[in-house]
Image 1 (cartoon, rainbow, N blue to C red):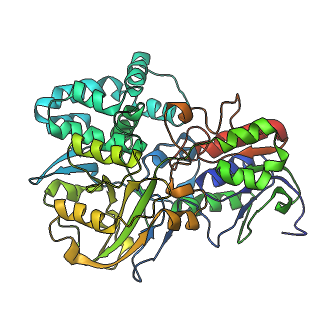
Image 2: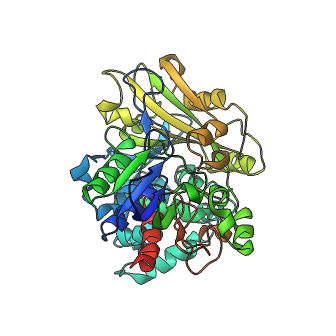
Image 3: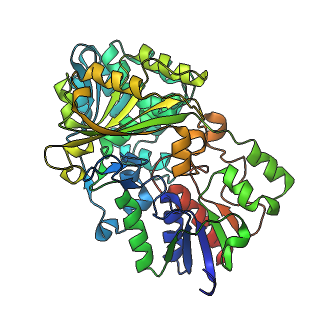
Length: 475
C-alpha cells in the first residue's frame, strides 16, 4: 500500500458491511480503499469448491431474506454488476415425523390454508401487518418508513418482545403451526423461552411473505463481488492479502471504518480509546456458535415430505418442544442429540451449483461458543430422519467446527455468526450503549460490523449507517 497516496476513508474488512460502508462513502464523493486480510473478499459471503470439483458451496451465509429486503442494497444497481437472485417456489419448509411438513409460502393465505385449525390464528397474526410487510421489514433493518397501518407495527412490536414459546402456545393449537414459528424464532440463537426470540419468528415470517427467502445465483460470493464491482466503478479501491494488525498499518487517511467485532477492534485500535470504551468492548458478549457441514450429493435430498422439494430452506427440528429442548441445551453449554438444523438446498433451483444430476447441501446447527464437539453424525442422523436414504447419496463432505469458522473469518468469534449475542440487552445497544454506536472515542475511527445495529445478517445496513456517521465527520 505504500506510495498509493492518501484517502478520505479506509475500510478494514471486506464483508458485506465493510463493502456497504465503502460504497456509501464512495457514492458521496469520498476516495475510499478497502483492505482485506484474506486472498478473497466477502467475509461471510464467500463461496468455493470445498468438497469436489464443480460443487460450489457457501462458506458463510447462504439464504438472504435480509439481503434481498435491505433498503440499502435495493438502492444500488447490483444486478448490473452480476448479482442475480433465485427465488425458490416456497421460502421455507419445516418437516415433521410421518412425512408431513408445514410450508411458509409467499402468500399468507396459502400458508394459513395448510395449517388446519390454526389457519385463522395465522391470518390474524400476519394479516394485519401484511400490507405493511415491506415497511416493517425496513424498520427491522434500520430504516423506518411511513406505515399505512401504524397499529400493525405497534402490535408486532409488543408481540416481538415476548418469548417465542409462550407466543406460539398462546396463538396456535397444532404442532404444525407451532413448529413453523419455532423454527423461524430459533434463528435468534436464544432459548425459545427467552425474549425477544419471538421477534425473529415474526421478522422472518414477514420477510418470507413480503420478499421471499432468495439466494444469489452462483453462490453468496456474488453479493460481495457485485458490491466490489460497483465500488470500483465509483472510483473505490479494493486490496486483498493486506492484514491490519494496528491502526499504524492503515494508509494515510482521514477516517477508518472497521468491519470487525469488538475483540479485533481492541487489538487493532484499543490504545487510542478511553478506558471506559475499552472496558465496554471487553464486556461485549458473544453468542452460541455453529457447526457446519457442506455435502456433495449424488442426487437431490430424498425428503419424505414432498413439500420440502419446493423450498430453498428447510428447518429440521420437529416440534416446538424439540426445537425448544435443543436450543435450551445449547444455551446451557450442552450439545443436543437431535439438534435444530438450518439446511439450504440451492442446487435444486440453481444448476450452477453442481454438475448435472448432482446436488449440494449446506447445513449447520447451533453449538456452545467455542465448542470442539463434532456434530457431524448428529446432523446426518437428523437429516436422515426426515429424508431416509440421504446418507447413501453423500459423495463428499466438508466439516467446519467453531475453530475452523473463526480461522476462515476472524469475525466469527467462537463460531458466532451474528457478531454478538442478540438478547434485549445487547440487540439494540451493540457494541455498548452510545448515542452513536458506530463512532468511537478516537476521532475518525468507526466500527461498521454486525456488532453494531441492526445486528447480524447480510443486509449491509450496519455499514451504511456507519458510513453516514463517518460522512458527518468528513464533510
